Length: 77
Image 1 (cartoon, rainbow, N blue to C red):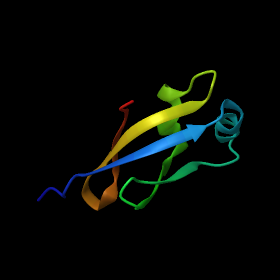
Image 2: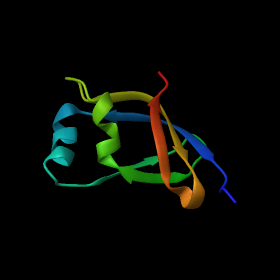
Image 3: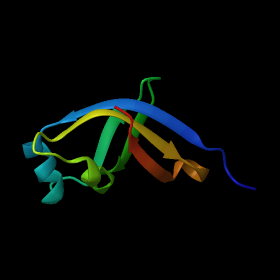
């Protein structure tokens, strides 16, 4: 039986310099608070497609599946 799918919206503002620390191995996970108040943690590597010269900024939608396993991360604005 498939697990329930959960979606979480949140804002993220990380400078390019700070994001480079993640790439260099200083930290592996990103921790954010969703709009509804849940504390979320996921691998920083999932943010790579969204990195610009300014860093990572915007609104995101994180989707998890069974046992809250990562499914997808999408920039929504």
